[in-house]
Length: 431
Image (cartoon, rainbow, N blue to C red; front, side, top):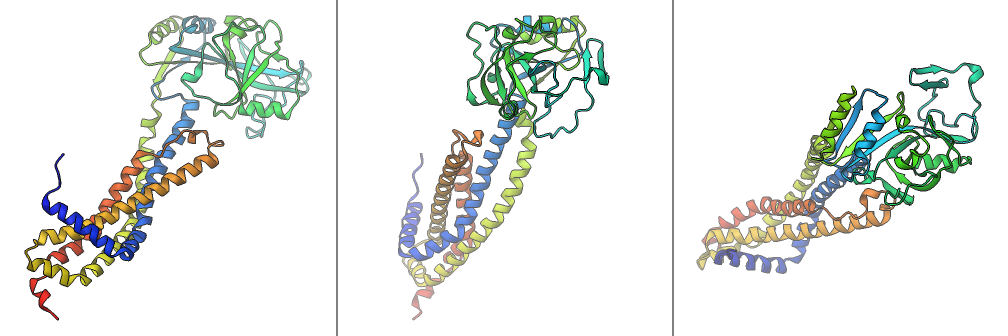
């Protein structure tokens, strides 16, 4: 590491002495610059926090970056069997199959027919329909069951722990344990919307699923935040298959079949080949949410950085005014230094050293204030905003603050430094 030259060390030492001798003016310079540097730090930190918040929500619905997602285009009676047999027991791939489930009184319609949210945001679900392998039809009035104490959810059966791909946030209880023997009574984990419904309505613990050999008695073991507005419940597929045959695990009209995999797993090629053989076309994509949102985040950051730059320019103007006033008061000092052989470059370096040190001190204060503010926000809102939990102060914001302080020091001290270097030696002779 190269050491400072003699002139550099001299400029730094004299600059520090000048700051100590003029504490009030240094404080005024720091006050005028503080808001500008703070704005740059806050914008950079805010952009990092916003990126984390957006990615956190996207991960719940799409999956973490790098996850390979396979959706199924088309239907086949063998679809459920092919998917579950290929993926079952593997740790590098998880299959998700969804179907309708009604929990509550038998022989009645659900209070949220169609699996609608409980705030009614989906509007009127329309007339009751009946669906089977041949399609859907509207039920005649004589066959329409009355509404009763029952709740409809989308029941998602899993072959393994999907949280390695979609990090659902635990709210209470526990997640499904795939390391234990499957239970005859299906264990369910509800999402927040489904839990809201069961807290609002008292319904019997009896679950009916299309194609099941009998109604089941579910056991609720936990609640998670999955980012879905529709009431949904998660169950182990091997527990559901005790009651629903493999061929009926996929609803031909309302089924959802998706496989989440790690990149490079042989499951992708094997499963694609099997599906194409039965006329089902797999659609494969890789989750890359950060890249997809890069342009949006960059534009947002540039807009706010431009606004922060305007505030920083006001601080630079403050340093410039204080620097010019200080040079005006030190004319005789600089002229005397010139008379004893001090180079012009050293005089300019002394003034620049003072403004650079002032800029760095201001940057340190702004970074410290921002870090403390972030800790306070995490302590106050971390429990309600999961993406804040465990978050550290972004290093990018600290670097941006240091750069802003250095740039402000250079811009604010450049003109005063030139003026100091241009003071003639004859000035020392004036009375």
